[in-house]
Image (tube, rainbow, N blue to C red; front, side, top):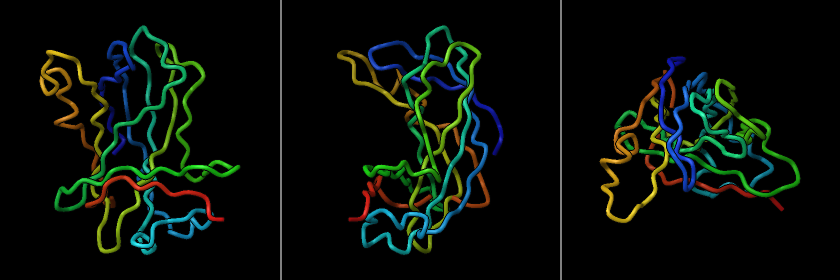
Length: 172
């Protein structure tokens, strides 16, 4: 944790822009942190993990308006856990924000956070960045976007499991 990696950030319909990405902290929370949200019943005893990161634009293109996404979590068995998304409500989920910067030119930095809900009896042991890819007619996706298939990993004492992403919405 804390190590930098220069990775590609794929702009929609645009080029790959290099960013220097650092996972700065992996913090275990408490499911009570999500008390204002409807968490799926099978995750009522899950542990939220907050993966905090920073990144610097190393390219010529302005990354303003774009969020860094493309994270994946891994448990001790290397099973994948996709990030969870908090949706709706009048207030943002302040425990873990990932706002898009209004502007992010070459050399500028920004911070974000990704939420993982880890089922009971699992723990997040690594977090990876595999970025995004897009299908382009006639191109070999694996050859053109290799980081998607072989993510950069940061390890921790704590971290992921066997779930697809989870969406939690405000409780009524």
